Image (cartoon, rainbow, N blue to C red; front, side, top):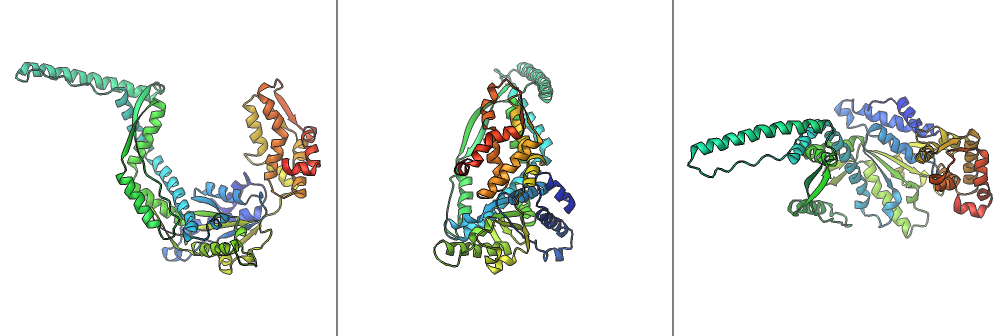
Length: 457
């Protein structure tokens, strides 16, 4: 991934409105990883990622920036909730599970990449297996009298003729398969699965035993063979997957996945403000302080055991996010604060931001609803004054009640188009215009009634 910071920000602009400071910070962080890959090995070990802490209310784009960034760079990415690790106390294993999830994500990326490399050969092998299924080899003739050499020669000639005819027919079927003329023919495929029990342990320090048991059961568990009938089209996909798995090296994939997770992995820790302990240190607050202590070595750089090998977190990029309504970043443990040197504050959304959110991104809500209504042959037209009114309601409701950012648009749009979505299949009118009057008629009464809007909007 060799995008410049400016190009990264430009790509993020296609999906996320505003928040330029946050976009610039993550773009620089990603570019620095690209730079690190190109420095001398002696220096590469010394360069650690500059972790980022995003501070801002919900619904302003914190998670979306991180998710889009991972998609853009092809990096392994997982999102975890910091509060998840307070539910059962602060077992180290729970916090370490985020690294195992990251490796699983990396494994999926590497496997997909390796399958793409062997796709042509996998397709060729799958088609050969389909030819075998559609035209099994002919049975050899039985020689009834072994002492009769003339009979044996005659039978051999007969087998030869059958073999030549069979190869000719195979060639015809192969060409028909290539042209897609046999996609609806039915074939029978025998698939094998192993019934492997899930071993779940919440005891810290038991991870290696858990992996050993899992591996042992995979080897000794009986195979279940099931026969499935499917079309040639379905069978081809199934067989390509099977052949791809046989062509790629499992060990190579696992090694590459660990390396990818170590060098390019991104872990997004949401709601980090919720694990800030209050001044009264008792009950759940002790647990929160414990989660911070267990997060510290992972963010600092440690080695975690996974079933694919040991994973170092020294060069994983951590992006933390939180609203920090009742606390501030300085309330975190000083050691943990120091591991997030880049602080970015995301701004509250204004009415103008809501207008841009409704119109500019590639997958904006207005475009989504237009596509949905198009399936019912209804043309949905959003007038500028209608979008302006929607933005005004979203901004006003966020000001009056809890500010949930851009997510407010989802509730308002659903309320606005609820009746249309219900009536759409039976409507004779095929063009619906969403203007200011249309919006006002359906939203105004609800937004004015404060008690009602709390429940509906």
